[in-house]
Image (cartoon, rainbow, N blue to C red; front, side, top):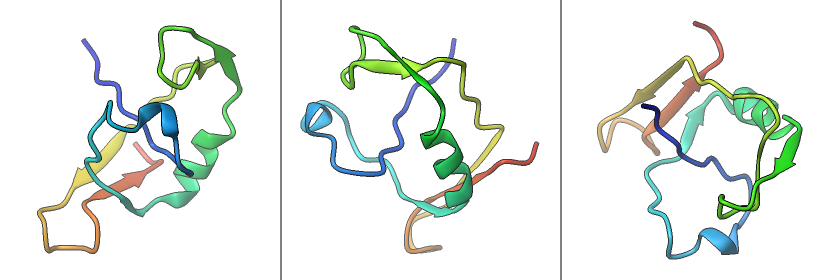
Length: 79
């Protein structure tokens, strides 16, 4: 089983009220920008209407306790 979550770079009205916000990237925006450039395919079963053409894997993410940073999620592109 896997986990699916969304990292948005702009407002996404189709997701409003359907999903909870769980954090904000505090480090690794280069990773987010790389992910944003992945080619997408149409996918009707997703609220955004599309899915990555190839799987996107985040090898490491650190969840920081509240108060340890301005936001709790840090992404790294190194294994």
